[in-house]
Length: 317
Image 1 (cartoon, rainbow, N blue to C red):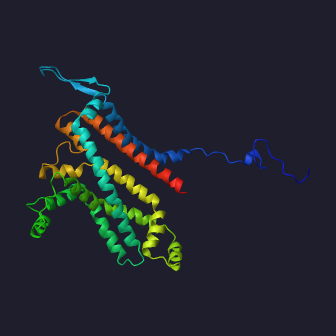
Image 2 (cartoon, rainbow, N blue to C red; image 1 turned 135 degrees about the vertical axis):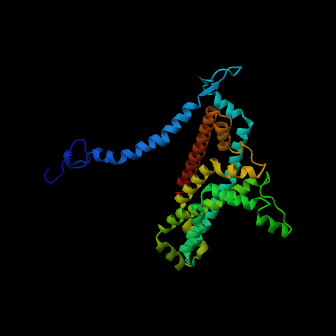
Image 3 (tube, one colour; image 1 turned 30 degrees about the vertical axis):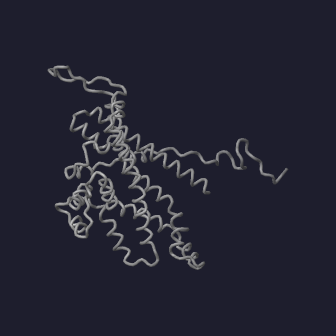
């Protein structure tokens, strides 16, 4: 029958098979541009990880008299068993999990609050406050820990003197408050960075939505709760994952505060325990096993969190 489009076998349209789009091949000049990145990624990221995992399966064995050089023998999972049965190491893992439960909500709430304040229609001097909130991120972690350490030590701290003058003597470096002191340093340093991530997400929201909500009589709080926060769900998840990984890798703050207090030991966190085994006890194989366990823990927790929030997000839709 004339006028009827004849279908080509094997296709769902009347277009010739030659007109179908063929998959693009990777051109040689593209490889020239991406090769430096993948080379550096393999050398400085994948290779150290692989070497650490390889080292974790060996151990040093020395003679009973110590007259000969120690030999490197295959240990299998022995280093992992040693790490997981070490009460100090497992206690440090529990400690950073508690720290994560404290720090992650504080960080997300503070960053979100600052972002909403700067994105408010009534906000003034936004550029000044944005830079001011972001400035602590430019301070290296060692310097930030030293600065706050001087504010925590009773002999040098004006904060302790002010609290004592007000009848509220306080020791920030006690065993029951040191985690909160470390959380304060981390929040002060990284809240501004996370705030900028959220501000970038808020600026991508069409302003017409806010104007329509104001026409309907919604105030700033209702706009923030019903429009802004739901539309920055992806940046919120991103900063939460970053904060989770950062808290599980806690190292710099307790290392710097350790000489200032007896509440922090050489195995206070998993990273400190691995550092002590590598450079204090010269047991790089056990340190590699500890580092591998830390990486696995960070991966499992962050991946599990992403699966959880994505499942809840799909149910919401």
